Length: 311
Image 1 (spheres, rainbow, N blue to C red):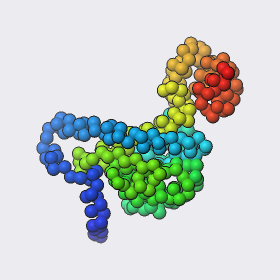
Image 2: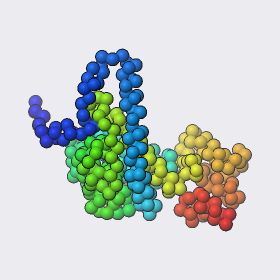
Image 3: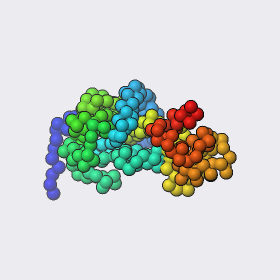
Image 4: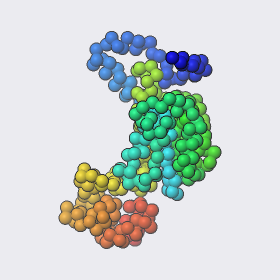
């Protein structure tokens, strides 16, 4: 059996991270009743939103920068390893059904590739070269935005992704859960959500993972709001790919217009099921092709298209 190599420098780095700190007051948590452990864990989780709130100005600045790149045709790319990488892939995969984003418009890269979603890929997170290769395979350009995600803020794959993206002129965001991180320092927009030591020492899929999920929710959702993918708080670019989403589409059109069911069905039929177009048909009293033209001229922003129709 081959012995695992010892890395004293890495051990020292980990010991210095807030997310890796040992909490002696929880050393006997395994002796508590299950309900008491659950209460303790829930109390820990309750601190995450405040940690995110402390970084809202940085998050908002990053969102505006990402939206500006995407408005000119760029992509949003997440890059991370382990839990951080899986969260990026999850967020990216939710954008097409929710916001009707084009294939490849929002991308999640995980160190080790798709197999790493369910199985640990040995050494992948330690390779900045792998991150560069993954980004090169996408044909990264200066119009794109790359978000490196790492709880520790030191993961070589995430840091390497940001450094390479910045070298080609892409926008870069570094999301970490420790202060003074290499990842935030490497990025134009550093976001350090300091969640502190975990309930289980070093298990950063807990508070740190929750914080990352909250921030990624904001990055993608608010970017899509800025790109006109919503009308108020309605998902008007939803892609109706199943019965639930088709029912949701009808409900969204009803909420936006107050129209009768028969009129909603006619509008959706006239626009091949496109929710945003159907709303414009009903509110502006135009036909399907005119709705499509108005939206194209308004870069997909429904409010602007309505103003043009009424102007």
